[in-house]
Amino acid sequence: MAAAESLFFLDTAAILEAVNLEAARCRTAPEVVAEVRPGGATGRRLEQMLAAGLLVVAATPEGRMKVQAAAKKAGSLARLSEADVSILALSVDLAGSGELLSDDYTVLDVAKRLGIAARPVTKEGIGKTKDWAARCRGCGRRYGAGAAGTVCRVCGAEVRLVPRRG
Ligand SMILES: [Zn+2]
Image (cartoon, rainbow, N blue to C red; front, side, top):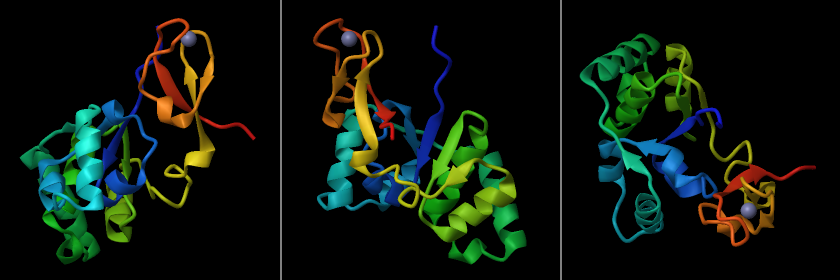
């Protein structure tokens, strides 16, 4: 049996830019969803990800308090939006089960102070199509990156994204 796979906690920028993440492994907060304008590029991307399995999970008041305390100590609480606090709090709540993706310097800094696994979404190539390929878990057959999340034509196992070698 495969090991449990880690999750990705997405802020608004990550929803738009992390195009190759498997939606079912992604979580976001209701406040992030509320921040996205329907109809725009991010709105359409959000719709797609929700349809593909992105889950919207509310952060606990405890998680929120930890984030606010850390940001206050760092002097950056005023620079965090409601959505920022929420996705950070969700990452605190689910710490150990995944990592936060954001391009917001303040968010990443507060995450670091809280000891949450976090990294920038665009700077490490996670949003770049050329770095990823899709491959069947069962027979290893290769597919175009767009086939991720579908079922293998040959053996019926799940096709998922893997980092492209080389
Ligand atoms: Zn297969």
